[in-house]
Image (tube, rainbow, N blue to C red; front, side):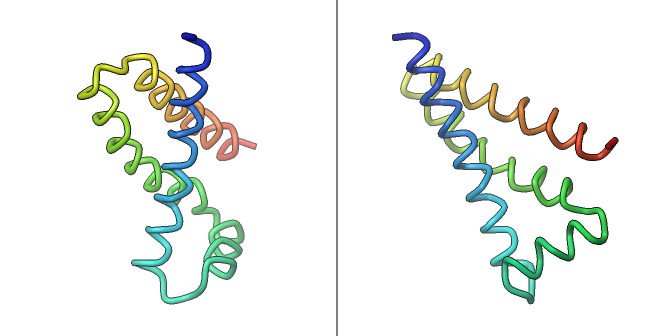
Length: 93
């Protein structure tokens, strides 16, 4: 049960991060999603876009805490840490 709750929170965190990236691109970029992501890779700012997308993880994290679903919240936090590590690895490779 605990592993399932952690996994649910982790997947929610990853989905929120992806949604945050898409929302950021939709609101602040003049180009479409594909072009923006290609430009981000070419100009080495993809990590910054992903990090800004992670801001949306605050929403499910605090919703899970408010509902006293601590393991779901831990999963969201784990997803955020995973994304941060992935961005750091991407940045240095």
